[in-house]
Amino acid sequence: TGTVTFDPGFMNTAATTSAITYIDGDAGILRYRGYPIEQLAKHSSFLETSYLLIYGNLPTPAELEAFDHRIRRHTLLHEDLKGFFGGFPRDAHPMPVLSSAVSALSTFYQDSLDPFDEEQVELSTVRLMAKLPVIAAYAHKKSIGQPMLYPDNSMNLVENFMRLSFGLPAEPYELNPKLVKALDLLLILHADHEQNCSTSTVRLVGSSNANMFASISAGISALFGPLHGGANEAVLNMLRDIQSTGMQPETFMEKVKNKEDGVKLMGFGHRVYKNYDPRAKIVKATAHEILADLGGNDELLDIAMRLEEKALADDYFIERKLYPNVDFYTGLIYKAMGFPEKMFTVLFAIGRLPGWIAQWREMMQDPQTKIGRPRQLYTGVPERSYPER
Ligand code: CMC
Image 1: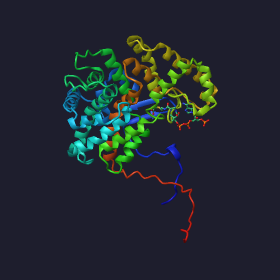
Image 2: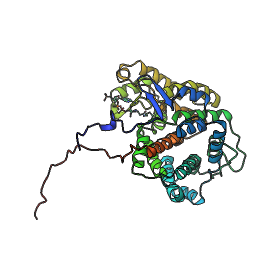
Image 3: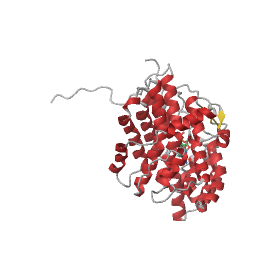
């Protein structure tokens, strides 16, 4: 009742209060629980940042160790859940495999589904943190026809994920510490971003008191889209197309500006940032370093940098305040690490997981929470009578 505000895409509507992440889009500022992203990128780890987002403060060394330990103890997937992977086509995209398997966690862990039972919420939190990277690695292994390894709990979450993604049973897997550190950094940068499309989805689904697995599975589906997390995969495809057709970046930019066939400069633009995305700044700064170390494709990086340079000097982009976002350079790094394009958005999902969990938990504890139920402006036929026949 009362006045209904029309706000498609929620351009101006705050759906919640939140104490987790702060963004100043005009100034290009991002903070988790008050800590600037630049400081976390430099000093923190993905595990510590996850703790910070979920529990509100940086952990003491003992708290961090306990968190790490609990996660390591829950990495194993139920054997029947592993059976799921055999049911999907070989060329399945790993994102729907991931969302399906996370949804299926509700069937395997029926003892931790009550959203208002603190202990159960804690158990679901740890299970998700531990198992999602394992599911992600298995989706990858399935797509390349390789056997799935069991987790090795002497490794932390990121190390285990690398081994499960690239290791083989026939030979010991040697961790590359530079690679682990680079992935850890990228996961920190993706860990939360306030009320983005997937997080809002997690909250909307959770607002019906749906359990954490169901809510986060829905968030993974939202992340899949190319306007959201799927952009990192779309950027690499775009760079590849430009490279393989021998098109000049300038020609591509003309197509974008003329909105030919709806072509966009993927990895550019953001609903909130009207300035350089602070995450993209960090990724760009490290991209050169990491690619030099890992032997990445310099030609694609060159194309990306030329596109950026052209865009930042072009009136079309200046007027619309379009800058590179986090997805512009990450794909190049993932590729250099050995991940296929299809895995890029899955890596985003692993990074965003603690944010989704933190936001879901915050909502469940918030006495202001009501079921999410937007209104509409009806545009259909006012009323008509069913014809007498
Ligand atoms: N290339 C060309 N033009 C663009 C782009 C782009 N990447 N992004 C926005 N525009 C234009 C858009 O066509 C519109 O122009 P006009 O005023 O002439 O109609 C204007 O800029 C405003 O854009 P919008 O689509 O109304 O803005 P939005 O806030 O609704 O959308 C966005 C934000 C991120 C969906 C959009 O910028 C986009 O599609 N970007 C490309 C996809 C992408 O990189 N997504 C990743 C987002 S960041 C991390 C994440 O969430 O995964």
